Image (cartoon, rainbow, N blue to C red):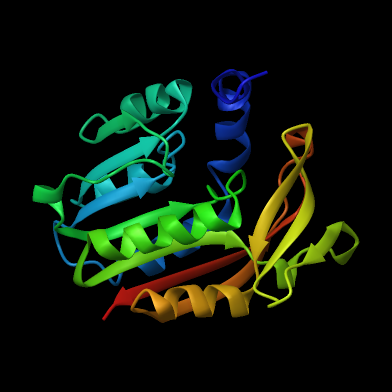
Length: 222
């Protein structure tokens, strides 16, 4: 099953399982406190647009989103009629040069199928697209907080680990940065952390997914 087909098969169940994630909802409220009124925001890996983009649009912000899944983009357009959403792979997407005036970029639980090199490239691009003092708002799983029994190995610098993950009834392998790895990656791209928190979310049983100790942070472009 290819990736678009995979996301098509889980999109409804995913929205039902994760749209009311209390960790994400709390993070959204904290992030909103850092945003200037009427901010222009890009949500990378926007999924169904719920709850993040729904909340951002309701707060008066201008929301754009990209996702590689046509099914996810279809849900985003329905959930956030005022937003602008397009099908695009975050690893190859290039934000229009004339539009490099983003006040904030969000990436929420959308870095599970990328390699270390791809994640490093993405973060570099996001920093480039932000205005000075712009915000990068991210929710990830940090390797430090992951179930040790599912961590296969770390890279020699300790910045990144390969782990096993159960998600929506599927067993996957993915790359997770450690907190140290994120600190380094942000620093080399001219970003400083303003707000960070780790909190556990336990998906509903029907989601057939691992518990998620989510590392949430807001970083500012220097």
